[in-house]
Image (tube, rainbow, N blue to C red):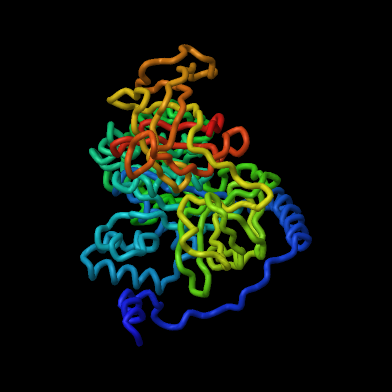
Length: 490
């Protein structure tokens, strides 16, 4: 072995253990792909009319409200977690001295999440209720992981807000700076229009009806103000640790039954409206994660934001001019031939250099490439901020799972929030709760100055593709606004 080979070996780039090599399949012919797309459209249309309809749900709320525990317990109640796994989780968590986290372990799978007892990244699971197939995105409630939560919320159709009924805990989450408020504003601005509020840990306030009603009364006006229609918001009392009122109605002698005889959490999940899917739009698949699969090839995960994706076709990766072949599509371990708009799936890609696959890149068909932009105008709503926004303000722009440095280069006009008409042109500053049209320019992350040109990102106006046209703006660790792209300028 010569010196250069030794140097390379020292970097440990060669994989340990043999990687199962799968022979490359040639990409399918356009005619075969066309046929598959037609089959997929027919099947998806039939599914829309069918009994079981699919949708995705993001679980949000303040840190320690019990989101992961609630979902872990619910998965167990619906038979998605077997007894053996439950006992293993229980043993492992009590060994660590965190026995109260045993249900959450079903979703918080990494070592660090389990040691710290908090969710850090998005966990994906599937729930089946009598009429719905629900993909669950368990989002982190901790302030430091808001970017991960945004990545999860941008893939969801509906939200489950978990609040802690314990005295002082609900207030901590709901007061200024609490995550209950910020999460609700974020999911609403990312297009989630229906929310179920699970008032958790009621056993800690001895099943007090007054406390449950107080929380509902505090949340209702805020939900309306955030843009949730009262008919699309439902409240339900639960106790996740005990599994009370999750999937079965309570026995008549239970303390909750004395004053609550309404639907259980599963009943409410079963009535969520699945959104209409745009299966005729051009294909858009923003990548939210990239990882090495079990077989040869690279696996990417994300959500189909328009159109239909078929196994065997060759797709362009934007930005850049690389292409990749979709070798396999899978969701929750099931292999699929195709996936339609709104599905959260993993794709195994071959014939591509892993360097060209980045989080935030978009896969699309060679004939219908997603436009790139580094300057665009957007309609935004300014959140509850302390420092006003001025022209030239540096911000962080979030679009799907990508976050890039940007600046608000021009304040074009202030708009009326109710009907969108212009109230004032060229305002000098934007203050809290204003609605405005602004111009946003991406800036280079490394150094500033006229010579540095920022790399454009894949974007589309909201009028063309709703999911590709939503943005969030953050500054100094807090979300200061959200909105939709109106026009691409450069």
